[in-house]
Length: 143
Image (tube, rainbow, N blue to C red; front, side):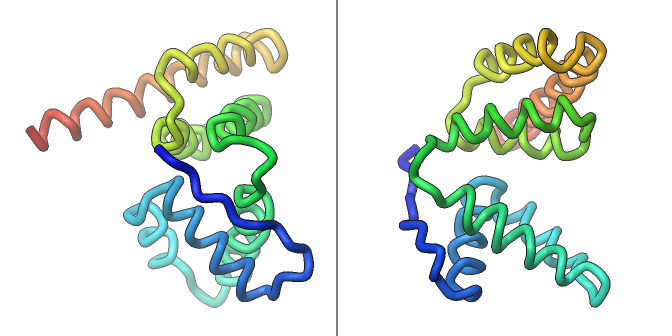
């Protein structure tokens, strides 16, 4: 998978950051996920969705300094360390989209067992297994 890198320019307009962020968000998470997230936006959550699209995806994920697989590994570790299990599931899927293998994800979880905790890694393995099973089921259904 070839990665598109955007040139980070702190002077970019807020709209340009949002557009770049939305492009990367769709590439990494997939159109279906982003469309579901956007469908649930209301007056209460709109500002938050714009914030994460603009800053997380538009200013961080667009930077050329790290590959997307490295960014995914870091993100997986952060989700494990903080116990964000739903976000971990989403980012396991994204890590695969970004080119990480299941074995590389396993290694990230093993590494996290030492630095985040064995109980956290135990949950992370269960979350990843669930994602893998769902993907395998989806792939079997499309054959």
